Length: 388
Image 1 (cartoon, rainbow, N blue to C red):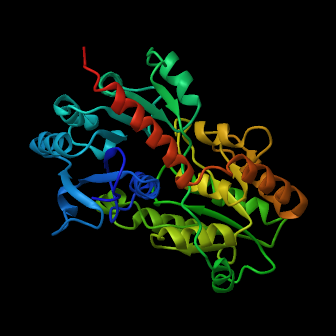
Image 2 (cartoon, rainbow, N blue to C red):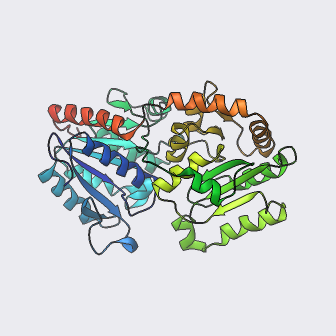
């Protein structure tokens, strides 16, 4: 149990030490809730090959992803110990096809549920659509991280927006960091540094970014591109480091050895925040439109970075009104032009930094957890909603 008074909240999610964006999201939310006086119990979703020998710190119940009975047992545990459940939803973290086992948890819960949607597909399969509609039906409130979710839910899923609430992605409280360590270690002084961070795997647009860098250094030879993060666990299970090796060969073929820095490991949160703070530009070159959330993009925005991104849903919303530079998908020429422009124009970088930092100034987990807490108190008073 975490915290000591007020409404009792259960959080169902992946959770550290598992390394994924939703686990980090939930860790920040839990810490913010506890700081605001809530009593929190964490139900951590774990894969069968990652089951710890004892419960990790803060976790009171381990829910094995592919064990249907665990979903019923988790519901019993939550019914007995909390007033409200906050459920983090993404199809891939729950068992069964498209995470259908999650619905077994909802069927057995007798307390109100607040569901946070981390994925909202514009073109869902019939299975994905049905699961999401059932999830919404069984929830007292639905939280979206991007305001674009209102339109997607109304136009694609045809659901009422009466119980849909927007709460932005939170940012951890900044402890006393040491970004200068990264600048020294990576020898960034005198260079314009660009960072992409995340679990490495196909579908992140890194090939486009490298092609763009090749063109950009012709006009801005002081550019250096930092690619940070471990290989995605699922990619590593399937093919080891073959994808990363392909990217490294691409760097050599393009003659970018002096312009690309690899940090081939997972970065803990404080390390990541230090690194983001140390660089000049943050780049998300993702090729897919449907992404409605990005923790690292939110961190970069909150820390006041000049940002270049492809126009996926979350980035388009966050960077509109001139708060960043959006470039078309899979377009290395436009990306190269944006990189060169920012490399040459410090005043533009400063202007973008100020704009995006103002926009995200109130997005600390301490602040946003208060919104979740108020929502939890409200649905607790209303009581559980039936599925009928």
